[in-house]
Length: 553
Image (cartoon, rainbow, N blue to C red; front, side, top):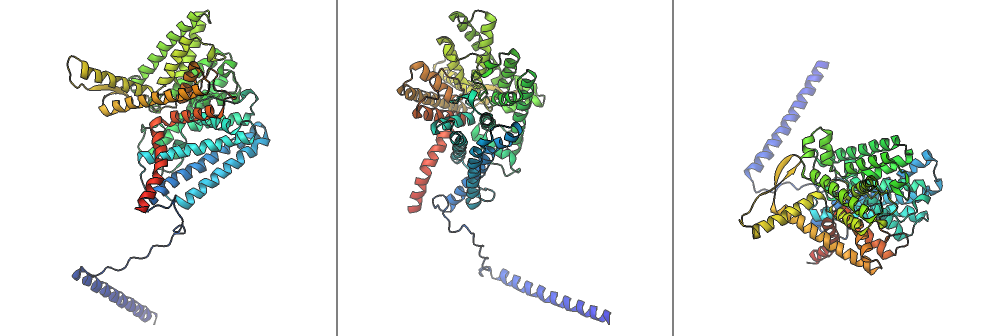
């Protein structure tokens, strides 16, 4: 009986399968015979819960994709910015610092995370699939940095340490690794000193780059090259970001141990190592490195500042043992040659002024200040740069213009761009006024290999230098309108624009809101580079207008 039932069930299943196959063949043949027959209606997509919500001003389909991509990036970055704001809270129980300041970090941090959460999950949830153009990427990075500046300025105001304009200046100086401060550092609570150093840490390597390193491969933000990291150390942006972050953090850890070995307190060692490698300049004492009065501390500082001013690609080459790429790179010889020449010139200036009697003392001061200025760190071993002779200040201004290597944490024009601009000028003069008017190939050594410089690269470098000088002139004029003399206006605005952090005394805690805001704008332009920052700002201003015109058309 059981066998009969199983055989009957099996026969019924086979007959049903045969009927289904026959129906499928008939339908398939009918479609092939009638190619013009209407295809079956596609399934209606599931209604999105956000279908009726406006997306950044109500845009059409292409702009909707762009708006969601921007919301994706900015939302994630805002969550990350708020999380960074909470890091100093973890150090309060460890160091038994002032717990009364905890709400100053909790509320802005949680508010930023909530705002980023809403922006990301309501408008930008899911992986952004649209590749941002250069203008959109610049705008995205600019928005992220503006949000970070505003969020990190809140604790200073909430604690009553600074007014809003001073707080914006302080947070901008910290994130852009400039190091100019309007705080009374000696009376500042230690939790805020750590907060300032953390701004150096994340701003030095780049906010977007750090966030990119935390995302999964393939999901990284494709805008961190706007922050000055154009070289790809490994395939993929996420892998490159992680390598850069590991190198950066390792240098800081080694620097902190070296400072500790020199007798520096542990808290000071960590904060000063972050400032040195990030080429920031914030110190835990008002007199900076001079407060320690130690030659070993100065030597360690010089090494760390030079490491931070070296491009991450060259640091990575040194780690891999590729010394040929390091020593034969065009920026290596130029940077150290400029340091040697400026040290000799500044030593002669100090001796000629009679402020320093011995050659050894003059050379020690000149070497440290030369490295601190050209790396745009801004550490000092003298009470104030205002006491230097005018000739030494002139050398310092030239160093602030040049800056250090491209792809590093330093500011300024950058050595590589200065080399390309110089070669472009020389090439143009040879072509037009030389004896043999012929186009010659211009080559430079990049990472151990001789490569040809295109005319476009040299023109871009010359254009950047020209724009840099124009912005510098405009900023100096504004400072002069605010009451600065020529020396103070030129020196302090060059320091802001180059993210150097040294001053002759014009920018102080008593400076007016206009001076502080102009200085903040200059620091942000110097950190994000003038042309990309201006492109991003222009896109943010003109994009809504263009969308409205396209919508009404």
